[in-house]
Image (cartoon, rainbow, N blue to C red; front, side):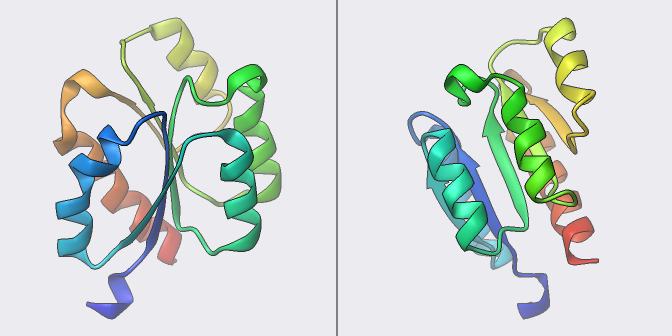
Amino acid sequence: MGEKCGRLLIAERGAGLARGLTPWLAEQGHECKSVDNIKDVLMTLQNEKINVLVMDVNLPEDMGYEAISIIKGLHRKLPIIITADENNPEQESRIRQKGIFYYHVNSFGLDELILAISNAMMRSAQ
């Protein structure tokens, strides 16, 4: 299972998502780090090997969607999964144009998000 191991960075206010994903991540042998601001996201990406970033749509404070462009500029191949509390097609469209891996609406539950993380981990390992 060692070759499947990956490092997931979860960027969210609070730790609800990280708590919800912890049992599955442990079962899969993945490591998880959780941060709550964009500065820590950028610092972590600069200093550590991260395979997948899961980031709350509201996290980037004043940077808005530009945070995605900055991250993509630094780590072009990093799969980014954006989570949102509400289904907003206009917002989703603007964010998808930034080249993210997946846009997840939290009310759809964790199963879809887990599948997206699994797929992103596989892509990251290639």
